Length: 54
Image 1: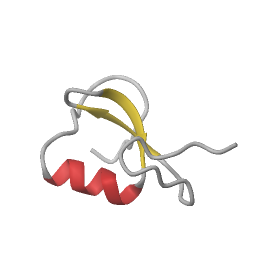
Image 2: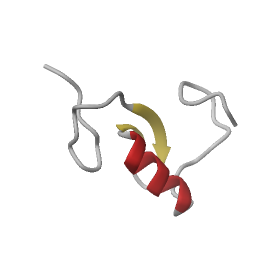
Image 3: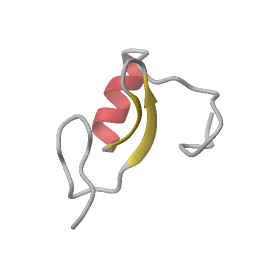
């Protein structure tokens, strides 16, 4: 039993942790993470997991 992307349901790729505006913490695939980031829907700078790249 694998985890699925909270947005698209994809489970064939490693998932990333994201704190999504209006949803909260969720695991998302890289494609959805990129789309959410481009739409400014990911809250950055919070404590916890996620990408340490900035």
